[in-house]
Length: 629
Image (tube, rainbow, N blue to C red; front, side, top):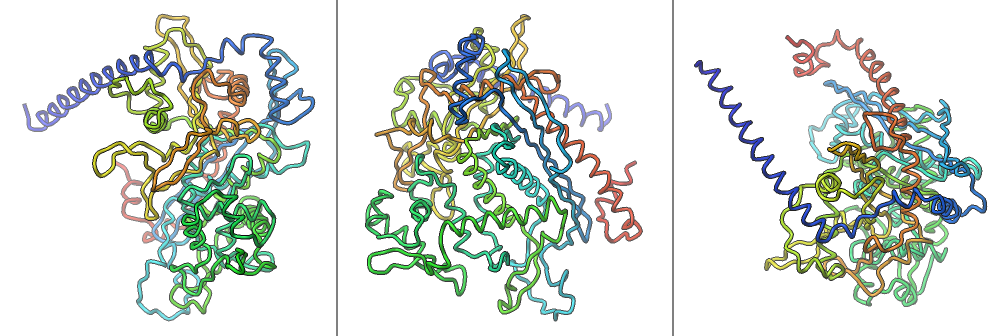
């Protein structure tokens, strides 16, 4: 045998052994999953198929929809599904990218039994997309815009902006902007159900770091965006019924700003403010320190609030008002997005900002991912408040998440605080690696009586970052995600997560199943506030107090989840073999987005032809890959 044959024979043996070990490990964990399901987890599964088959229950669904959407007579539910697309081509001296969003719109006619679904043509006037060239090296702004500036040979990290994933950030911004535009439509034109092909709670967590944006100083509408506007924006969304934002340790200053917004005032007595938030004097003073001291990381910064005669007030009550600030920031978000996605103006990606080396001068700079994330954060928060205002059901559906927030984070914390005492006596062996793998094994291997549609109970999205870990002494302790500011957690009482399956056929010996999908739904104050655990507080010194929304088991009535599952089941027609068990409108939106993206990619590739006669604009890797043998 030749040496080359020996090498490939070794690969073959290694692959066979690895596959054998993987199968054995998977089979063992599936067996553990069945035992855990039969012993406990079946209490967290809600079967909707028998409920939806009953004509009486379907009539009650219509009455429930009228309550949720706050409509006296509701014969149809208008919906829209939104998906995004993006692409990027990188050259040595520039990058050309595309980002956009597409929607599929229609109506569910509840007066028919079963309900009838009708789609509408998506008008071209609703196009939300952008294509642009951006020079590289992306943030040496002087090299791009100020060729006459003297070369100092000084290198500063403040000049560097990584735009490698800017197309993805712009796609997310386009999706949020499209959803906000639709939700802000006139009384008779906005949809009652908005579906987005993403994890809404995941996006909320991902864009939170947009607080580091450098957009402060952006000129718009006779003034400039400032630090006060940015701080107020990240205090949203605000809802008094749900107690959002909460007064947990990380972000207590947001609860203070929220009280100014709710009271519609620029000043408030400190004692009254502290009592409204429910903090001790020590914790309250610590939160005030963040608002009443200049930012040490920004020279010449001013405090956002001042203390005077036992009152806390904004620095300039005529200029800084939380409600006016929030309205201004939303207007700025809409203005920039309109320029980007409607007017197709790539210059909207640039703005003037103080030079890091010479603050007395202003330079043109490109928007960084932090800046785009800030706009996305503003848009998502504005969308949430608009949905609360207009009683819109906002749902995000993710297909292939590898998370284990339910079986690891949620159950771990709930076991530790005693919500599920039966877990204390169970010896749970290792489960499949992710929630999706665990739940997709349930109808096949664990429960032959399970029928679709079914779903897990909903759990608060705070458990994305709230988990059970070990302290320095090896003892179980509830903790958040570690960051420079300490332990942080996602906002609670904002989104509710669940996992659901919409197709399951037992006509053959081996069941035919659709994938389990991840569903995020916006919490609705009128219906979900009563399920904030009273008397049971998740509290740690590093996090503070967290009061999540909890639907303990399948005996707890969750009327909004029942309505949502019914609507998603009606929209899941299983007409497309490649997406069995997935709502059709989202697949149609994906079709539309990919069709546009494919056409644009062809245009992007052809737009680079004039640069082919300039070899230095192409990297060695691109040249090598374009000449494949």
